[in-house]
Length: 150
Image (cartoon, rainbow, N blue to C red; front, side, top):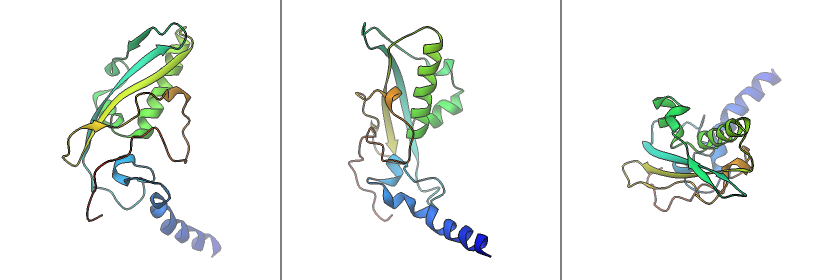
């Protein structure tokens, strides 16, 4: 019986975890999954990754289609957890290719619900140093508009 009670408590608590994060849920998507808020947003974006040698300052840009299918690239471009995961994948890949002192930056812009495209990720943050966690992601630029009625 206690397992059933715990199950139902979790079914009520998990969808409301987004209230623990500051900012607009539909923009930063922190706590979005399993939150009963699906099908309320339309996002599109692009993300251009820059690999930098922190000592020599030499850099190059990544062709995302060398690593991702078009569907994967589309999904990655506007979801911050996917952007971070891809940045770590790129860092690990290029380290295994012999590159050292890697830093990974992204130029990312997203359009939300028909609004103009806006910078999404702080382009000065080395994403290879950022770790995935349940903490608030300060490298996501706050949404400067208001979504009414939600």
